[in-house]
Image (cartoon, rainbow, N blue to C red):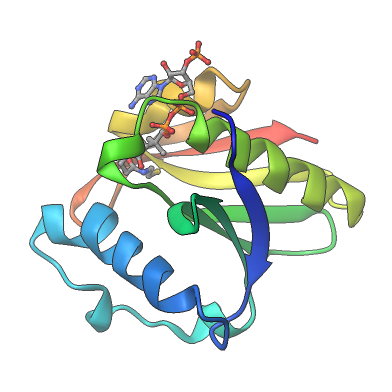
Length: 145
Ligand SMILES: CC(C)(COP(=O)(O)OP(=O)(O)OC[C@H]1O[C@@H](n2cnc3c(N)ncnc32)[C@H](O)[C@@H]1OP(=O)(O)O)[C@@H](O)C(=O)NCCC(=O)NCCS
């Protein structure tokens, strides 16, 4: 999609409240959960990457340092009105470039079973068997950067 402004933010940034709301709305409320009950300590150490369209945050993800070679992509969420328009793909591609530029060799993530096709379309491959997280099936997926 055009006009997606991609920036990194921190919990002190004005965009953080929007990112919190987006994660809660897209990743927690549909499961009957609240982001307020999550351990949010990693929000202060992870890289928070967001895409803004016409001044509003419509997509976000977080990058967590696992070790010197592996970065974990987590909390991937696209605003419901903007899903299926390429915003998720653009933000993942920006995250891959950011991680590669910092010397990471592999992107790792816990994909919801419902999102396997999204990551597969970007050449992520599954590793190991299905497991449960936040009460729903997931797979580990990996991509060499
Ligand atoms: C899954 C999600 C992140 C995808 O982002 P998006 O912006 O809607 O997806 P895009 O428009 O960038 O799609 C990129 C490609 O993946 C495909 N795709 C997107 N979502 C898909 C899905 N759930 N299953 C299979 N393929 C999917 C698209 O068809 C597109 O294919 P193309 O490049 O051949 O045209 C987004 O829909 C979302 O936030 N969903 C709800 C929360 C969620 O599941 N988050 C991920 C948790 S692991």
